[in-house]
Every structure is written in structure tokens, then in C-alpha cells.
Image (cartoon, rainbow, N blue to C red; front, side, top):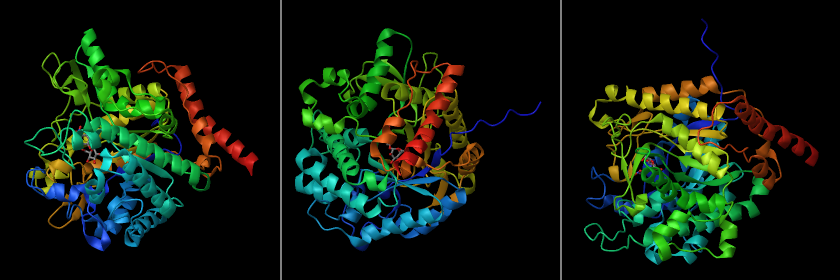
Length: 533
Ligand code: PNW
């Protein structure tokens, strides 16, 4: 019997790989760059597992042309990277000078990507806060200052790059910024109540204040983009949130409730304000007066402040009620099922196992709850002990290939069977790189980096991902949303149709809805666009 035809992704689906400035650039004192909070933090003994820092990383500040050549060879549609705030404004603040060399670096990168047909997908903030802002006023802890400084930084970027950049992410993974930086104290700036870890910090209040201020800063940057740039530049802008699927350990009511609580704290903390206009009730219940409040005027800026749902996800947790970890919503996570078996293949990091069905469930959950088109902006796997293998064995990364095989199948089912409006998939990461507090031992790349020589060697997973997406890509149709002069039209029309079940059955109606929601937008945009000119 002939093989069934390969099911395709929607037209104009974006796929590619992602990185972040501090994880790849190195050259931390080149060309006038100011320090970021990760510079000294990563140099402090005990903060990074292998004792190494970000001074060299993958040397992409110097080797960026090689990175672009690699992306071109892979044939990606898009490349997600982040801007280093302190390269662009070395001291960070709204009255501080702009560094032309910083602008020039990213401008050249953007031009080179476009010259090779690669869409730049740009993150403004991927954790490398200018050190000067932390020293000056406490960085993310100081609402009045940081909102203004972040908004000015965003404006500088829109002005310098917005003629060519049509996909913007404001902040990457605010849960990690707040909890890991100001709660657990394992990421810069490393503040925590744990005095063995930090001489400063209050883990019971600071993470929630920081989260609140990140939301407001994001929202003001989006407001500036929509009011001052979007009409002319025609791009999309949103926030991207980390969040893994949370599955009840068993069907006891308390564990079913626990899984929802875990979602509320990991995702709802940010997504509910941005998309629904309120904090999750469970967060109010858990934090009481420790949860900061927005004024009515602030809520107006926050609610609806993202054109899409930016989703970073890696794993699935089995959830049991209880435990003492407020940052997980007083939910215990495990990968061991009640029958003693493991959920999936263990990665190099303790928090990550491979469980592809969770990816599909999460897409359905987010689409049903927030009703936004979804851009998967990070997803990937670190093969256990990859660093201890010689490189010709490390590049045969079977566990990573299996991971991507699973999630891509889930992606296709979510789109084609469940009707979830997913428009982008970015694998983390283009390269092995500086994995924050884990240093260089944990490798997430689809490309192996030999740190002694900075050689880049494609792993088998890159071949899998590239082939999978190429086989399922349809001929592009003009993206009229981006050409349209109207800023509100695209976001109204791109609202997906509603589904009612977390994992809706693949009914004919479901498929029809999915088709309509995908194609009607383009058709109506086209008609509107035509009549506006
Ligand atoms: C994300 N966790 O970080 C980041 O956006 C990337 O910079 C990073 O390299 C990638 O995922 C892989 O870790 C995370 O502890 C860091 O659950 C930690 C966690 C999740 C995501």
C-alpha cells in the first residue's frame, strides 16, 4: 500500500532555531558594551556549575557570519535571537547614551539574515539586565524607574531595527527572571532569603514584585510599539512565557486541583493578566497582600498587551498536592508514575524528561484558555552526558532526535486534528551555548560547538528538524497582515475560533474550524487590504 500523504503545516508557518545574546555572544567588553547582571554573576565562584562564564560563549559576536551561514544551510524560515540591552545602551537608562557600535552589530546581523531570506525574530530582554540599572535603583525591583527605562530601550530598538524586524518579543520567561533571579537566587542577580546563597533579598516578596514590574514594563513597551511604530512598521509584538504541561499524578481531586495550581503559578501568573486582565484567583489566595496590585489605568495597558501567545516549553510534570514550594504553587513535581515507571527519557537537567503528549495537551490548554494564535518560541532537549562524549558520538544525538520526533508529531496533531492555531515553532537551540547556571556542560544545541576551536558541527537532530519542517512546509502566500496598514485588524481577525475541550476529538467540524480560522484570516485581510488602498 502507498504511504499516506504527508500532512502539511499551515501556509506561512514559521520555523527555525533560537538563541539568546548572553548565551552566545561573548566579547563582553567589546565595542563599548556595558556590563550586564550576568557578567559578574557568572564570574563569581559557585554560581555556575562548571565554573565557566559568558566571556567567550560561542563567540557569536565575532562569528555571527558563520551563524548566519549555518542557518542558511539549514534553510530555516526564521531565526530568534536576543538583543543585549547593555550593548545598545551601555548604562541602560532612559537618559543614558546609545552605543552606535551596538546598533551597528545587530543591524548588520538583521541585514544578513534578510539577505538570506531569514525572518529575524527578536527578543528585547533575555535576562541580561544592564548592571548599571541594578546598581542604580535595584533593576526590576523598582517599578517607576524600570518601566520607563525598558520602554525607552524598546523604543530605541523599534526605531533602529523596526523597519526590518516584524516579530518582536518583549521579555523572555518572566517566571525565570523573577523566581530564579529573586526567589531561588540561582540566576543573576542572585537575590534570595537564603543567606547561604545571598546576603540580600527576600524570597517571599521580591519575586512577586519583580514579576509585576516585568508585566508592566512589557505592556508599556507594547503600548509604545502600537502607538508609535506599528502602523508604519506593521509587525507583531508579544511576551513569551515558560510553562510546562502539568498533569495530575493520579485522578484524586486534590492532585487534579494541584495540576491547575501549578499551571496558575507557572503560566497564569503572567498570562492571565496579559490576556485576561486579572491575576489567577489561586495567586491571590496563595499570596494575599504580597501580590502587588495594578491600578485601573495600569490594567488598561496590561490587558491585551500581546498579539500572540509566546510559548516556551520543555517537559511535563506529574503533580501532587503539597510540599512547601510556593514557587510551584505548593505542588510537588515528579517524573515517576504511581506504578514506578518514568514519564520519559531523562535529559541532562534534572527538570527535563521527554514526554511529547504533554506538548499537545499544553497547546490545547493555552489555546482554549487564552484564545490567541500560538508561537512556540522555544522547545528542546539536553542529552544526558553529551559533554562527556567525543564529538563524533555527541553529534549522534538519538535522544534529542526522538524528542523532536515526538513534539513535531504532537504539533501537527494539535494543528490539524485539534484545530489549535499555531503559527511558529522554534527549536532551542541553534547552538550548544552558555546554559546559565549549568555552564557549558548541559548542551541544548542541534549544532555541536567545540569550545576549544569554536567549530560548529551539525548534530543528527538538526537534520531531523530541518527535513521534517521542509517536508511539511507549503508554498508561501503573501503575509498580508504584515503589509496591512491597520494595526488592530490583524489582531482582531487572528483571534482563533474557540474549542471547548482541552484535547478536542478530531471531528470533521473541528478540522473545518481549523481550516477556516487559518485561511479566512488571510482572505479577509486580503480583501480589506485591497479596499484600503
Ligand atoms: C529557558 N527550569 O530557560 C531559556 O529561555 C533559555 O535561555 C535556556 O537556555 C533554555 O530554556 C534551556 O534551559 C529555562 O528550571 C531555564 O525549569 C530553567 C528552566 C526552564 C527554562
